[in-house]
Amino acid sequence: QVQLVESGGGLVQPGGSLRLSCAASRVTLDTYAIGWFRQAPGKEREGVSCISPNDGSTYYADSVKGRFTISRDNDKNTVYLQMNSLKSEDTAVYYCATDCATEYVDYWGKGTLVTVSS
Image 1 (tube, rainbow, N blue to C red):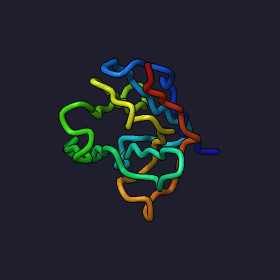
Image 2 (cartoon, one colour; image 1 turned 120 degrees about the vertical axis):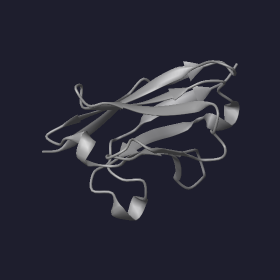
Image 3 (tube, rainbow, N blue to C red; image 1 turned 135 degrees about the vertical axis):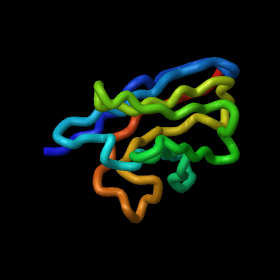
Image 4 (spheres, rainbow, N blue to C red; image 1 turned 90 degrees about the vertical axis):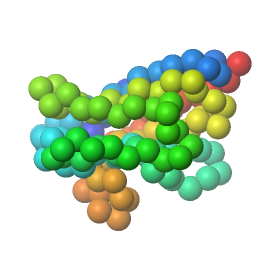
């Protein structure tokens, strides 16, 4: 059974940093574009960042550009999302998935909660 497992979420003060990890089992992540999505309370899920499987090109939503960095470690079969200068509006459950567009995702993780609050 394919599993994506997110970790690294938690409570952080505004301006702080967190690094999220997306680890996979029974699937090789470097064959997929991997996307990070988030869903805040009462809002729809939105795409945050994505990394391609071939040339490692990246995409960022305007709301996180310059603050978040996506990367992958193929040896560890893991994709990361480094989040800096966190704001209260970054509070959400963060999910990783095997595509940049929700309609093409084969596998989703269960999510990790990020809370930005003083």
